Length: 348
Image 1 (cartoon, rainbow, N blue to C red):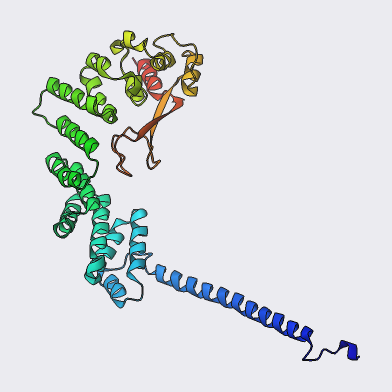
Image 2: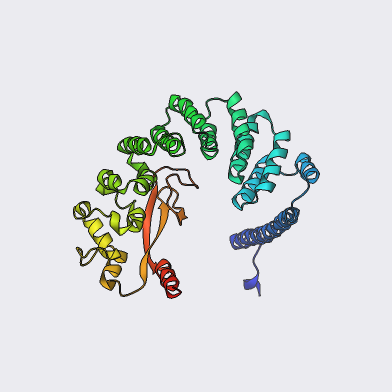
């Protein structure tokens, strides 16, 4: 039986003890970790239950003043509410944080509050918040950019153009913003004649082709002949929706024949038969159908910067605020307008 006995001085005994200790430590560490994660999750769920319904201002003030959670966690919670569109909760948290924030973090909280006011549509409150930040920190490009957006949404284009001056001094690229604001101001100025608007818009277009859709949406509406003569053929793609919806009597065949893209576009629409096929899938389908089906093109726009998708054309992305980042995408869909027109005729 002595062969099965291991003395405490035996090296094998030391190895057994060593691995036993490792096993015990690992075992207890694993279960302790699981216990703590479960306990933390329970505390977090209990905390979040308080916010299923919007707490009153007094309740929120008490929760923040207790300091049980760090300011960073409150900012994350407010940001989460804002992303989910619950701006009221987000705004209340930021306002209460401003009462307890130290000078080091107060401007960050003010900036986040200003952004939330902007997203929620409280433009005047947003304007006041960004002006307050700039009063003490005038060289803050983020606040200046949002102040510019606020003035743009308020249609105070003169004030927005004034904001470009300090941004230019901070070496920010504001050339496109300048042309964009000038174009918006011109389009919204009822005192400028139609002819003068068209002339000045074309001058802006020569300086920045990123504004092609904004400019030619107006010019095609008021003077199609001049629009055909002045837009660059390389901009035809971004103008596809405008060109697709233009009346047949306003087409300029001389210009259309100079562009393969336009030949394919209007062959797909059925106005001409210059293109027998197209490398663009949607165009090719409509060309091959030759009007035998009640089909048309539908359009949507993707921002090349943030990849946001929108059902309408835009010059400034409403998500990331980039200018001239729209990319048009097509799809073949049922032509409800044609169907509706046929139904109307049946009653006549």
